Length: 208
Image (cartoon, rainbow, N blue to C red; front, side):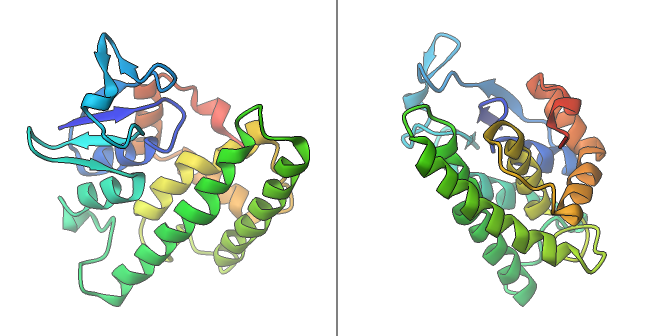
């Protein structure tokens, strides 16, 4: 399978899941500004023109971080990266993935471009701080991973985007549980490998 990524983006999540289950993905780093990978035009792969995109075969391509991560996790149920379909635990994971996608990942996006004014960016920083506080509270009972069980798709998604607080200047100094959780995830071999495969420095992702 081929995974189209952009270094330093949410596309890190499915890479982590693939590492957890021992699947080797062929990685293609996309120049999103030019919509190209190498000499090829990306829109021919992804009609959404976004990353990640997972090419399963000549007829099947999947998009969206959470969807691809769950699809890969289901390849190896014994790894317990996502609960079985049809269970309430599965619904809870899907609920959290929806929250992470809409209320965390998408709230970071306006903080990245230069054309968004500083007042608007401050509003999004406030929203992010509030939403990240929810995660900190969930971790306050001493759980190691976000859903209270083993490492899973929610954790892979969060480690791919929460460190963006550094470059977007979102203050989480008061969220001690979340910071410890991030440090714990960054020590996981699957995360380290995914970052190195992208050419990232794991140290650069650690929160100050």
